[in-house]
Image (tube, rainbow, N blue to C red; front, side):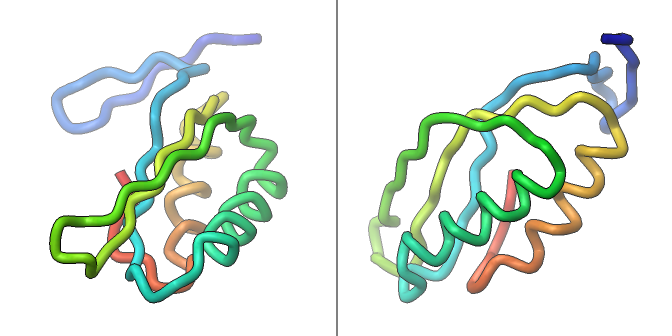
Length: 94
């Protein structure tokens, strides 16, 4: 696999790259819905992922989900973040 570099702010990203993706959604949305929507996006983009943890915010308004993803290039990363906006109740993806 070819290694490519991309700038992200002041940092360089070497592809392929693996990192923990955090998805923050309204806590009223059931985990099964969030996970299903994420898995459909990951499958379509062929983004391997594993591990799925969740944490409710202190006030109980939001739930954050974390999963490890493997991104092969900048185009996939851009498409992933664009598609994550479609997740029901999404507040932020980092």
